[in-house]
Image (cartoon, rainbow, N blue to C red):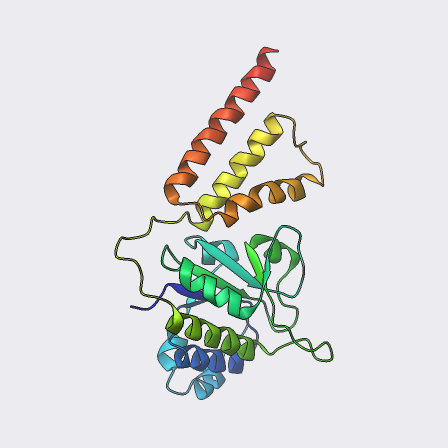
Length: 245
């Protein structure tokens, strides 16, 4: 049974890249991908390059936003060379190995930006961790289809090398949506406790750094719900204490 590994392409511009990416995915046993606001409208050039992978090309999902594309995912990795405090920057091989492990607990996503400018700053922040290919500085950028092939190959190798899943099912991991709810509840509690101040430009950075260990811990769905209940209760008590004082 194929692992629930999803490639997400944001604003793909070039139909040939889509066709070549579909072929690369099928070469490596991948079939699940989602396009967010594709700018390539005529897919005839894509079909010419998707040799024996027309089924993968035609089965691409569509989403209106990155949030919608990864809502059910337990781990989201963006492909970007940027360094962001609080986010790990992993090699393609390390990402592939961890994705295969995490996919046993739920869908995982690998996000690619558009051919011209890659991921935006907001999209980079939205991803849980980041990955980049260690290219030579003389030519740092990689064609989108080539990047899909490189990561797909690493995912294939990691899948082949992975040990069989344990007999007992793993606990269900918290989804991206559930993690976002916990992070929002943490922010509310920290604001209510005056650790964070509304509209403070440093607040988001502090919140991200505080939440990063929870994200890395791979919370289960049950744990996420417990955190959510505890933080909501704490925020409510803190706000009522302010009102009483």
